[in-house]
Image (cartoon, rainbow, N blue to C red):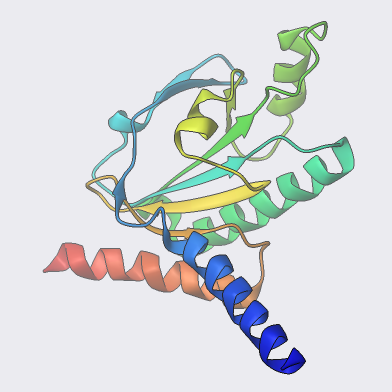
Length: 177
């Protein structure tokens, strides 16, 4: 009986963990406008008619964890750009609601300017909130019609990267038809 209860608990945990991974797929991505560290605006609705990768970096409890996920974000972006170059749009959105109110925004912008990939600053967390980001890192693949076709919150590894590439490749194949 004890083993049956444990197996049932593990099955329920597995179902809950896997159901959350797909709940955002097949939803229409919501438009947003944010500025990057150079104070240049970006709107999702202005992206060209090509697949878009949205990488979300949410609040972290400390700088060490934040740095880890920033580095993971760079791995994803750099490896996707090696394969797809200018065929996709890649955007990173950073939730900055945990920045202390006394810290000048100019200091934060200056620090983000040193990052190798452009990062859009979500000072109020509103974009992360509208996309229901509840992990330190979330990646969404959008098709050219701005539908979310795949999501992951996994750290970079070869298996997950292959899944992202397969889903992105499918978008190019769909577009040719």
